[in-house]
Amino acid sequence: MNPTRILLVGSDGRMGQAIGAAIGSQPTLSIEGRCRRGDSLKEKMQNIDVVIDVSHADATEALLAQPKKNKIPIVIGTTGHSAQQRQTIENAARSIPIVLASNFSVGVNALFALARSAGEILGSEFKPEIIESHHRMKKDAPSGTAKTIAEILRKQQSGEVPIQSIREGDVVGEHTVIFSGQGERLELTHRAESREIFAHGALRAAGWVVGQPAGLYSMQDVLGLNANR
Image (cartoon, rainbow, N blue to C red; front, side, top):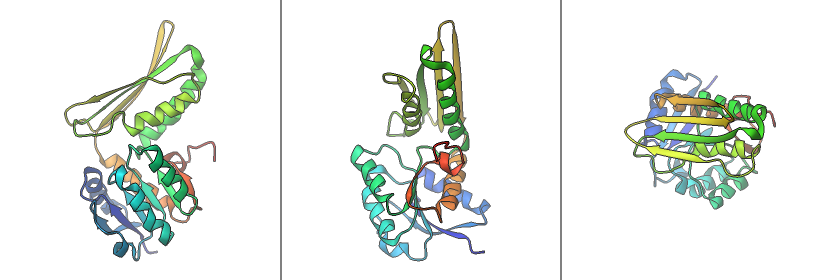
């Protein structure tokens, strides 16, 4: 069986380099092409089964045009999309399968599921808040992961969910969800110690999305954690 052929966009970034390093442990996958930000995609889309984009949110609209034209699925790992960029992704998902993930970590996606369950069990008497920390070079704040957790909790709570963002040192990523009640508090924390966890998750998503029907998917779908599908 031939391996799934990947075009890696954003190959020169931190995440792109991590994916490039992790591909050696994935015998069913291969990186057939690499693009840095600004490179032309047209000629590199030949003999490709799936695109992984870990470049930048501003490149999303231009990036989607070519996979959509070629009917090639795409895994998008960039965050910080505007409402217009998000709409572009949703429109493209009517034609091709797209995995849009704020975080590819299996542990973080377990955190999403646990936060949802905790919110349901604890109810409105417990008020949630989120604290997230990342390295000082991370541009977006709050992180896409923190925003995803907040979106999950907003479906159960009235009002906004406070998010505190910290940018310091070389922290790969840390997210804590705090549920504060009368006389007690519950905390759920995930700490990422290596970008390797995100790289393996992105590759897992790439292998999964090939052959899926057109639609917008999350990492919860890839891991079988989405109860709504």
